[in-house]
Length: 99
Image 1 (cartoon, one colour):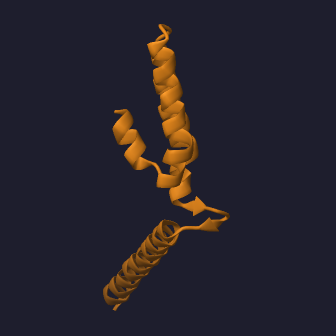
Image 2 (image 1 turned 180 degrees about the vertical axis):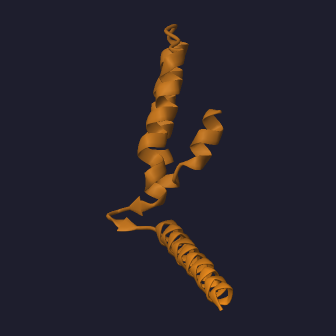
């Protein structure tokens, strides 16, 4: 599970934060003080701190951020178009019925 978590993180974050923290946990385990909760905390904290770096990195939005923004904007545009088409159909139906 930790390997899958590490692959989901950006490379720089994984090398600078995740791998040293995992090495510390393994060192503590080898010293006779196994802490199973430490791995869970590591995964949760890396998800909280590392995954947003896919969207925002070095003070700038990433390509993934632009891709997500583009998809959201296209979705909003399509939604507005579908609502407009539904209103237009209703308007045509009501005019046809009233004649």
